[in-house]
Image (cartoon, rainbow, N blue to C red; front, top):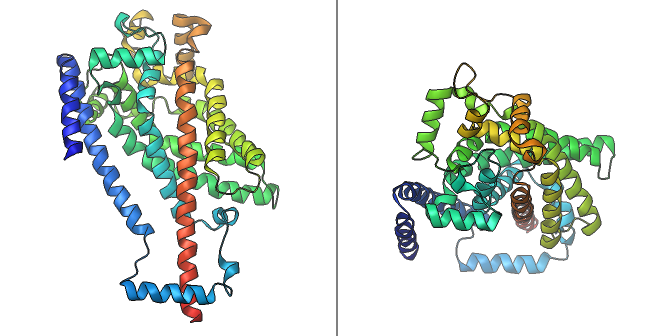
Length: 393
């Protein structure tokens, strides 16, 4: 009840910013409530799956007695974290990856909104921002408190399956390739190759959600909600519009993920050589890996944003608002447009917001992923331990 009251209060605040802000606030407020319900349901299912189903106190006491009596016999079955990832199942990687992806994108969504706007080539005069905090302050003041969260549910829907595929394929290929290239040791070449394949699967699932999200994040976005945005794109530009930036996304994300994974694994070798569960090392390694990869691939991200948003001011300025070529299509076309309208500096628009977004984003992603992977795998090993005790008894 308190949470509902809080949401209603925040929506009333958003409606005072005007009619446009009211539409944005209603849409984003609905998205937040929808997402909250989803997270609550997922949380309950995860907690219930991690809780051993033992019926009654007497049964619990008997299990405790048996455990105490036979601890010495099965000590070798008690795994440490270093051994857990090798025993983790594909479903564990997928579940841990899905939770990590949803949390990463949702927690950092307001900064992502700012990044999208700051990469605009020909922004409206009212959408010129000095820095990330200035942008957030002005967006909330002018358009309502919920405006930085519009498109959140589209991102959550896409991020779950995308990151499930991403982490599961990465873990599987990393182990397979490492065993082939450098048996018994970590291989940076294997990490990079696994990251490439994981990116192909991730972007195939995530690209349509990225298109919808970025269209709704733009200043004066005309869409009432996610479904309205999807319908409008489908009707006006066809289904191909959802994958117009796919090749550019891959061109950007393949080097990004290669740098990201190789840097993360290298830092783990330095900070956490025994690969124990160490949240601080996962967080620090993830943050530094994300920052380095983000800064290096910003020019490609600017081009991707242009292809996704088909920015109306940019199309007008480049003489493409009329005639047969009404759209910017392809990486080369996007590069030419960015250079013509912004010069070399145009390729680094929003670099500050991108790095600020990626550092905590990758830190959250890796720390949440490693936490769930550790917890789920330990739970599986504990179940095996109890079954072994019962079999021996």
